[in-house]
Length: 140
Length: 140
Image 1 (tube, rainbow over the protein chains, first blue to last red):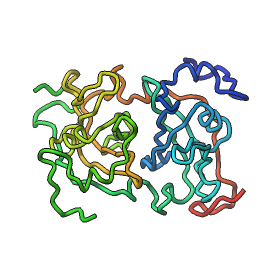
Image 2 (image 1 turned 180 degrees about the vertical axis):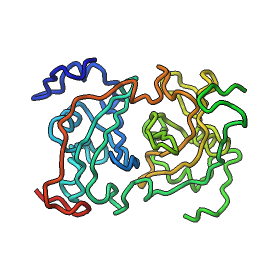
Image 3 (image 1 turned 45 degrees about the vertical axis):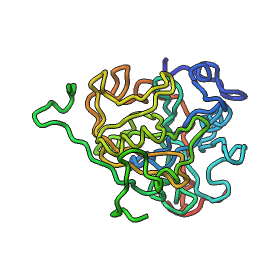
């Protein structure tokens, strides 16, 4: 896809984007929200075609709220606006990565990130076998 | 939750973790996979309770493949293993952030990240209004 071509998202999501989306049963794709400079992952939300269209055209992130069943432009109530820096679609069209400039807390709990709020779960840490190339294949 | 307490994930996912999960209709939560040192977002996969249990206990990331309807321990076929560094649950229990050490390409296309493979979608960039505090509320 050429990045320089013009898309028409003025009324509906351009079909060249819409045709690449692999939506779930509710018509949604996951959107990972990442702070553009620190690269911290702030939250995961969901978008339907119209939420993505609004996100692409307004400079502000809009989700579809699964719990409230309505559009949710982040920050309209809380003031914790997400300014869009870039949007990427993944290889199979079912996830978006949205880099943003997050004003204040991303999480409704007041934490910067929703993952800070939920917190770590103890996990066994894995390691590469010694002497294996760091960018090669791991054979076992 | 105390991080030092012992969880018993030996046969099934410890109930203190399982009780916090808010699963979708298919019993899954989204898992954002992030390279632990560069912080790049590599991919999004899905986990059911057993996939999360295996991820927490083995040092290797295991997903539930929605397309193949089977467990998928990342790298078993491709060699592109994901070693677990940390796992966090979000505030409302429907998303995981898994920091990993990714061997080779995360994406089946051979790209390091699935979002590199799909690529950017042109978007209007948003900016904070001048003179507004960088961590304060944006009112409009």
